[in-house]
Length: 221
Image 1 (cartoon, rainbow, N blue to C red):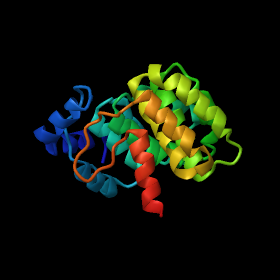
Image 2: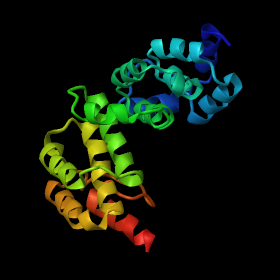
Image 3: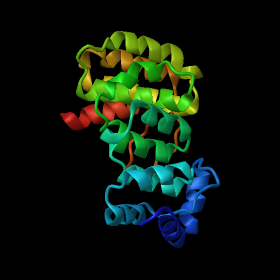
Image 4: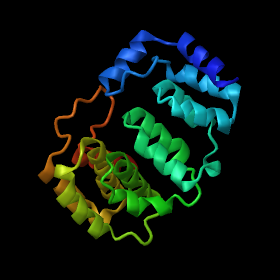
């Protein structure tokens, strides 16, 4: 499929309910509202196609970008390509797909973590803290967790909402996976109160760090 055919297919799959939900969640107007399942089916049909993926990304259409993420090969992107993509996508849903399918799979993604965490670009900072939360959970060797807790306590209250979300995830991962730092993680969560009133659907765990930490620890027992 070429770019025009792919865009036409995405348009034909538009669902107004999905579009309204994305807009409610902060999406820009440049989207059709294609269901995630339909995007995945289309990606399986197309398979990997780096040229088409990059063309789709340049449209800035959210559905096109979600599809692009699924047909990209992370290893074939340059570090600059990755950084430009991260900084150019402000819709959290698409940013999370980009992180999970591209950044996490990118060879030597460690080169981004510290630099992005200190970036003034909120989407780079958001992704940097996502990389940190991953290190905390899966590969904490070499990470000064006490220093990270210091940063979280000092910086989370004034962080942009987009960054605050992944900083909070880092705080929760510290409390869940590192018993020696759990008490302080819980204390910081209680002190800051970030997401303490966050609406949660039945059966889901609150993103409020103390609740999140305690529930995950309970499940580990």
